[in-house]
Every structure is written in structure tokens, then in C-alpha cells.
Amino acid sequence: MDINNKKTTLGDDAAIYQRSEERNESKSTREKWSELNFKGKCQFFVDYYLIKLIIITAFVTFVGFALYTTLKPRPEPMVNIVMLDSLLDIDATQDYFEAAVSDIGWNSKKETIAVHDGFSSQIPTDVSNISTYIFAGTLDVLIAPEASLDHYAHQSAAEHEKSVLLNLDGLPQDILDALSEEDKFYYTDEETGTVHFYGVRLDKTDFYKTLNVHDYDRTYIYTFVSTGKLTDNGVKLLRYLLGLPQPQ
Image (cartoon, rainbow, N blue to C red; front, side, top):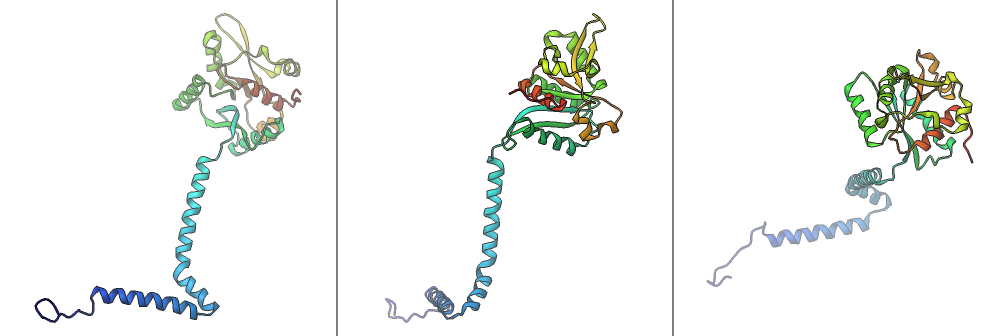
């Protein structure tokens, strides 16, 4: 009865009834759970919670994998290499240098040989990217056929202060002793007649035998980039390619 002595009637859909029904439904669910046998409880779990659990598990797994991929330490490059105008199988080349990491004595879990393949001297953007690497000091070794090296060799011979390729007369004696004249890549400055020792031919090395390079009509040459910061490691890799022991 309200203040005007009038009766009031609540409809069946009144909020108070709805809350009561929810409490009763919740209670009946708990009671139903307690009355279920093991098989019934398993089916109840499947019907009400399994899909939600799968979604949550998948989400947590995805987030965890994304964080691990983003935050895990990346192997440190021991040598940065560009393969220029290479016709070699990319996967086989990568596998070869991956195996070389531990053979040289580096930690294969934390260290790597970074091989950048697929560069062409006929594509301006590739040439530009190589120039960027050289300028930034992030390229240590350039492996390429002789014809592809002419540009860099000419630039190195003409501009001594801005030489791209290192003159290899200063290689360690054990490497020099292992090389014949035929193994050396020389470039002659046409203006001065000066002969420069810029590279090592790889056609007699294990590199050629493993990758079947003899199938191709070209000789790959191993050169050092003057601005590289990991030249000493490049020397270790050259020893490995030549089958020479590493100094203790």
C-alpha cells in the first residue's frame, strides 16, 4: 500500500524477482554439480568450460611465443658476408657457414656467420645497399666472381685513402705460405701499373667441394672490406676455408 492507501502490484518481470531467480538458478547449478557422478561432471566441464579454456590457452601461448621471439637474444655475428652474383644454392651456403661456426671454435648457440645472399651487381638497389654496408662498417667479407669485383678493385686501386678492398699482403704468414700465385686474385692499376693483391680464389678449397661449385663456370674470390670491424674473424674463416688449423 502506498502513501495514498493504494495497493501496488509488482509485475512478474520485476527486478526483485529476476534477482531471486538468478540466485535460485545459481544455487540449482551448484546443487546439480554435487549430484553429478564423475562422468556427468566431465561432460559438464566439456559443455561449459572446455572451449573457454582452449581459447585462453591459445591466447597465452601466442602471447608467450611472441614475447620470446621478440626478446630472446639473437646470435652475435662473428663475420658479416655478402655473396655477390652467386649462383650457389642459398640454403646449402647457409648450412655450410653454420657448420663452420662450431668448427672454427665459436659458440654456435650465441654466435653466427651472417651471410647476405641474393645480391646482384646488375641491380642498382643491391649495389647501393652494399655501399651502405661498406660505409657503415657492417660488411667484413665480400665473396664474388672476378668480373663482379672489378668495380671495387678499380675503386680501391684508384682511391687509396678510400679503398674498398684490403690489400692482402699483410695476411698472416701461415696463410700466405699456403697460397700459390694461382690462388691469389691480383688487380693491376692500368694508370700506374701497380699490382694489388685483393683476394683469395676459393676454387681449390673445401668450400667448392662441399657446394659443388665446379658445376658453374665461375671462380669465387674471398676479399676483405677495408671498413669491416671483424677482419680478424674473417681471417679465421679464411683459414677454415683453406683447411688450415687455427692458432692456439
